[in-house]
Image (cartoon, rainbow, N blue to C red):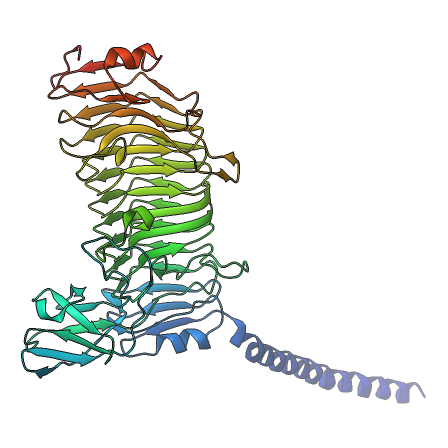
Length: 499
């Protein structure tokens, strides 16, 4: 009986020794199969790296990819791409990668003229400068990468102009295009405002038919429904040029850094929203289309921002103001910027609130004729609680003004009546290179209050009368009103003078 039990136990242990490895093998196989199945399920939802080459349908590739995809542009030219980014997408150029919003066109001759079909072109209704009455033709014609100016009379065409034949939908020129590259902008945006937290770096974006106030990067910027709106975008090491409207237009939590934004039709950069940073960038030669700078044109324009920071930029030769905050901006900082040769104010803080404008260098801003205190190097216009300190300002002989406060009837904003009150202008150096130009206050309402000028140095190179406070004032009259009690006037060598 004992022998029979021992045999049964042996058989049982042999069975266990055989079954256990088999069960383990089955379990391992099932887990491996589940892992493979999970990979197939999850993989389409994970971010991808997509390498693009010239000729690719970039818009389609972006549309097909999940949010958070990294797109890498190989060197070359990507023609007529309009991209709708998704949340978290990034776009990086390798080598010289160009997104070109224009397409080549071929002209045929008819007598002394050549023409090409371009179809319907939108003509807007925004104010233009008198010498550019057709700024509202929202597509541009390029000759060997130079912009031709549209004119209304085909009988006076020359090598730098073109005529839009609206009736027949044709572009007309009066020179033989043989041997030249002619393109016309066809696409509105390189990157539209469809996703959040988008990154764009090391790209060249050019020749887009962006409307005024719309960016070749960023489209219209913020959206009213709170979705998309170029929020959280970062644009770095990118060149934006030759587009008809705005170069870059972004929104909340955006960063623009180490960019070169130049020769755009209306303005270089615009933004709205919270915590926008513009840093270490060059913004130059914008408003080639000739939009009225009094409306919106030039280097930049920021509206309804909070905690905007504009730091260490070189802003020059724009047709309009260089750096401009207009309409209910709060807690703005302009620091360490160089602002030269703009055909308007250098820094203009208008119908806005608290700001610090410090350690900037502003030279030769404004164009003739000089009118009252307009087109100053620094203008605080119907704004309150602004500190202007430690700036170096140079007023050219025939245009512009120094540091000014302007007060007019401008209504009520987010934080109350828009008045020029509680502003401080201290520790600045203001040089007047000619006998004209002034610093001080222009107050048509008589409601400006507590605007303090003091501890400034005024350099008079050739003399003149350079102060206003409810009208032109001599130095004695100006100081008798309580202004600049500790300030000094010196000549070009630094020697104190009495004007």
